[in-house]
Length: 394
Image 1 (cartoon, helix red, strand yellow):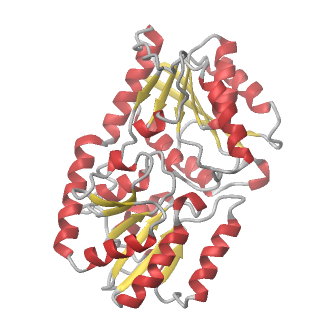
Image 2 (spheres, one colour):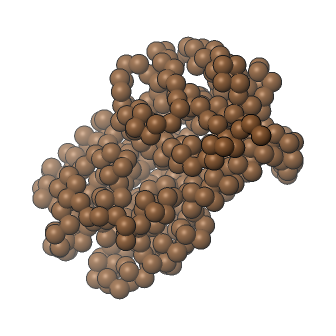
Image 3 (tube, helix red, strand yellow):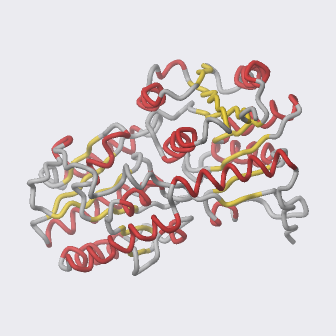
């Protein structure tokens, strides 16, 4: 039996680093059974960015891919290139990832007469008031109406889709984590970028792109207050600013400097492969997001047995069981964050208990194998026409 041929489309214009969607894509493509599924990734890029960390990671992965440079946001080159690669690759399914990929890829699939599946990762590339966000979301939702199936990573993400008589055929497939790669017993400690394991301070980290929706400013405000109350603590911002958000990073670093926190707060940018070694030296992960469709870095920390303190927003409560695998707080409430962190710093046994529960929850619900098997079922259901009909909404 010949393998099913799937053309994946990822929009990387404006994406420089490996974020949640990129990690998800690498995990999915890297774990599909190649005897049953053959994949080609069409990656839409901005040639002005050159080879970004994400593109280097893609090249290192060895996955079959082609780059389609699109210089102008209004260009149709991605649409025509996807159509070309559908024919060259003899694709049977187009699977799109991200807004622009949905718009061009689903249209190309329809024109080629093959099914189009879209995985949605939220509309958090821009702030809520951004005109770009509103325009892209509007265009994306129109494109999604033409999809044969939509994969969402959380029920919270499904709630962002429009209601009405034309309900969208949506399946929830949570992200998965490589339980061997993110295993505290297997990962060796590494003094990567000033995170020396011999440092006895409690290490509290945020692992996310430096972006207003990720809440780094609230984190450093909490760090400034906590540093006045506790001496045996250090804070780590793991990540870098995506294109067009460098000013936000400068604001965060300026706050650190103005509050004389340079000896306590470190900002590091690491390759995707280094994340487990960095997490090995983290005692508490903080996810102070204002928006979060899912939160892959939360899952990775949980897999490493690290307690998570996170905003009660988006898909996070579907991942973090409050009081069992971590602690939730209201987004933006950095004072509440300070109180929670003080409590956890003073109770190492509580941290260990939350971490153990977190690892068990990931093993039970969020493995890569579970994610891949659920995604494969969507492929099979779309090709056989057996995808359950969506429920009509009022």
